[in-house]
Image (cartoon, rainbow, N blue to C red; front, side, top):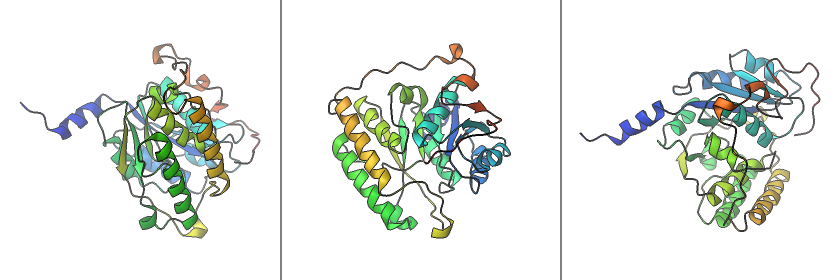
Length: 284
């Protein structure tokens, strides 16, 4: 009897342990709603990790109140460091795949669900693709994204429609084994190049994004400074991978059965609920 392709995806998802990771910095306004909605997404099994990246506001408190698992950096290390911390803990906790969701409320929960169901392959890297023009994104963001898309597509040897979207589905063990180094926004671009070099299958899925009025937007991305940092990291990655022909081997993550407990899974995790009483904040 033939199996419908849609049934194949459902069956595959049943064997895939999926969680959500929300990197957050000074996000008390939106992180509670984002975490609460993520916990309601079918397929996540109620598994949501919020990584408070050295916030000095009530980010951790608001996230913790939703029932999400809160991890804390004692100081602001950057989005890449927060994502790596969440991935390491998620893998040590037995998860295979993580959907990353930004804490600013721009990603509706049903769009995360779209990425979960997009592909049956647990080893695929799934990218959310935004229509920034239709969403009314600031012009500076649109220009920055176009430049990033152009150069990353050129260096990778294949076209990418959106290289800066924070809504992604990562295969945890494979992603960590790529050995990405950047601790800031360039982490996502670096992962993309390393994934291409390593032959990781990459899937792109159109998603809807919400851009609130300008006076309500929360972002720590500098449309001038951060693209320059991304370019520097991309150039360094290309040199390291010799034009994307080889990716240096990285130590494989510790198998789940032999992993140390989650609170010690990453040297970047200072505490696992509650936070340190007196974190020191550094600029994003």
